[in-house]
Image (cartoon, rainbow, N blue to C red):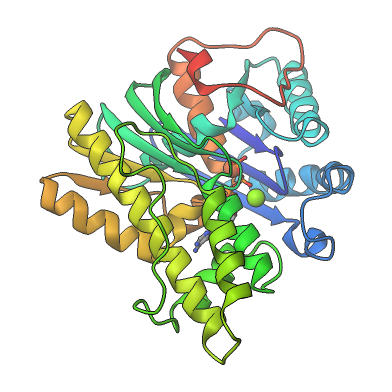
Length: 333
Ligand code: ATP
Ligand code: MG
Ligand code: FE
């Protein structure tokens, strides 16, 4: 199964074999190109995908030693994401499938993130609770099997990654600031400021992260500047996000009775979050599963895998090119 990902600012291509696993994968990140503008510029993203996708495809097929006649299906990200960016991968993917006479599968990007831990050993068994924490989404999902998803909770405002990026910007850390903020937080004093844990004092599994960014802003404004202020604010912010996510994951595990928690999406690369969830899961008698760090953010491997599982379950797209900017994961069920 060939997988093509172009939903945002990464061009990802991969080949996945149902029995042998991942054969090859390649990625080009546009992060450096967009950094200059402080965020993703959609038009530039689309143009760059156009330039990158075929060379990456050739690279992956050469690396895997796979010829066109050996490909049994083509999976491409059909949404959600930037429409112009999605259209690049969707057009290329659908056209290749048509030329090669094999089925095409339009994959939901968040289903890709959600299934990415299945690329690892040991793979989590169904059912599980998935925490999807990326640049555009914060979701807790009850996963009964491939294509059987129920949203337990989601962010009412900013996504976790978005909150990291916006707060990083306040701290002058550039874009995307999540990893830079996490690095700065390592030098911060956890005892200096305490930020709220939004929506943890009432029942429910929804999130709200935009208040934490405002909290960071007012703290920076109201505290006389000193050498460690930025690091201490970064630490207080990170601790608040991590603690909030941990509390909601624990609640979701208890409410569903699921012993397994799967974490995916870019914020899943955060080391302090991983440590907190590991500790919580151990105390609850459960286990946490992650994709390898490089597959936490966007990649072609998760799309190839999701496409393979979908195809095995009988899915196959029609002749049209599918691309949807907005698309709830619950619509897959
Ligand atoms: P979506 O999948 O919702 O469309 P996306 O694909 O842009 O969004 P990802 O590529 O999965 O999101 O993740 C990128 C996000 O992860 C960014 O917001 C980035 O700041 C954040 N991120 C990456 N590494 C870390 C880290 N170590 N700590 C905190 N945040 C991080
Ligand atoms: Mg990205
Ligand atoms: Fe993503």
